[in-house]
Image (tube, one colour):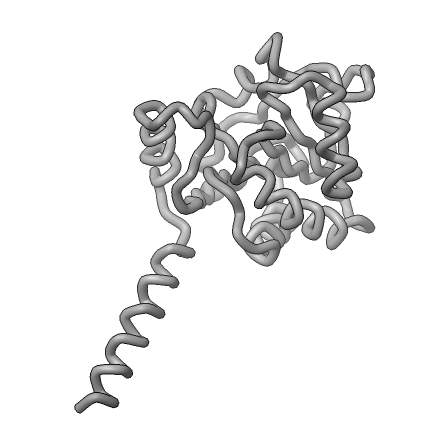
Length: 202
């Protein structure tokens, strides 16, 4: 009887884990609500949630422009023809720090493919963003969006406003293929979504 109970408990735990990793529609909006009504930490502290857009149901291509942490200008046209992973973050956001090695690993995995990573720092100034990148070995650039919110505004309707960390994957035409709200726990999850975007067609 004890063995049977242990088996049942193990199966229950496994099912709960799978449920936590399953892509779901609208879950990101629930997390956004948690952010808006939370304790003022300024980041998503709950489990991550994934939403994949079905072909034909993708939002329109997102156009944006901003200034990078090195002072240079950037826009969506910079990434035309490239699958782009856009990550919203800031330096003292605890889940953002947890997620940084995952992003670094995924970035390295696609280094020789038509994939680019772009950070969007929603709170800090350039020096702080560069210090964070150095600490975690992040080599891709970040837009400094704290003052203008121009890039953040461009993603309204796809990313809950103020929800960090959040990640959006854009196909080669600039259309969202997936959205992740909350810290990504494992690089394999992000890599799978990137591969899907690479396989999408216009």
